[in-house]
Length: 161
Image 1: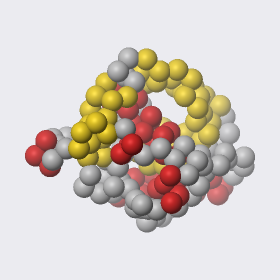
Image 2 (image 1 turned 90 degrees about the vertical axis):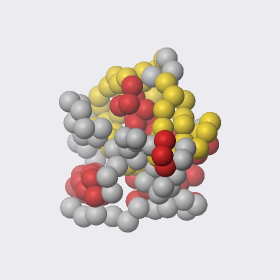
Image 3 (image 1 turned 120 degrees about the vertical axis):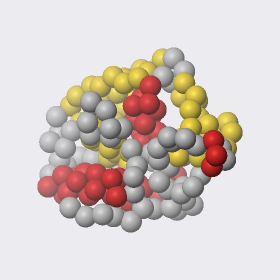
Image 4 (image 1 turned 60 degrees about the vertical axis):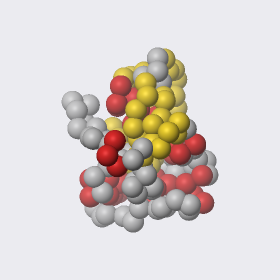
């Protein structure tokens, strides 16, 4: 396991759609392990593969709740509902935070590191983090959804995704 370098905006890879994963092997497992270590090292709650220079549909989320670490390979959003507005940050945009409105509920389908398909439903902050990371895999950055940028004094308890 290793800590990888975070790719910072305006790197081109951050705005490209990622390729689907077709091989569920040791290389993928190592990528997921490295992504977890990197996310923890930089105090994030999520990380997408393009943020460490890999153009593949792999993302992880860990919001420190009972859901644990969620590994998403080739994730697809099946349905969304509701609405929430909250502060978001991103490890690829250090020190930048903004208010973003997203669905409050999301249901996704994805694969785990072994290639087993699963579905997951999430609400609130976990749903926000999952959607933020899936956006990364489609080349969509949170800055394209910001309604208002936030000053540092407005940032109590905001996590970087």
